[in-house]
Length: 333
Image (cartoon, rainbow, N blue to C red):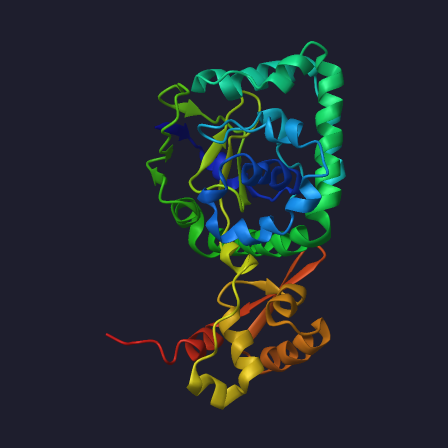
């Protein structure tokens, strides 16, 4: 169990963000013996295998521990904005202290009783060179495998999650936000407790002392993870809502809703149980963004959906009226 002592100032400084570099590094779990933990993503990544196998797969897969899918913390720096760019984050890795790479690699494998992979052992004879090789390999992986197809889909899911959590925080407070992020989190009397089953030892209670709290969603954890540093906010990584939508087809609308609104608009209203962008909705329905925009304009004018801007992205969601209408066929007690 890990316990963080949070003050009111820490709660006020709670930040939500997502990270393309974090998704890049954590997605290496799909190639390192852990894909069965994310079965919904297996078909998508199977399609990426030919492109992945043209890369430095030995180096990329060596970055993930086999027993608990840990990765060196250095490779997932804390996001400095709510939606940083991949190359901005990668520049932080390139500029990192090479000696920190050695410490983080050892901390990834040694506590698990695993030997450091041979490729990393050889490279650590020249840690600065190895750090550059890792950064180059991650950039090639991003450019070849993730940026063209996967990232636009994943970004929509992560952005929608961040918008949803921010709304929960604004409307229902920090307690609702923290306890709904994961069943492995609990909040009571100023203590945020995380269930941790790993071999690493942590002090019984960690005072955050004005450093705030950072929460980032990801498609590549099946529990919850945290990174702890004495001079930085605690960083909690949790499963994003809606990851299943990356590969699943939308369900058919309810018959009564389809009769009222028509098939396309009723399907859109049901999909908007979670916030989504025009591009994401168009992808899921296999139609053009322009067609989606026309239907959303009608639904918004009727008061059934609303728009929220998150940076350069506009997300749509159901209003309370839309929520009531979309659940009209739900069984009642």
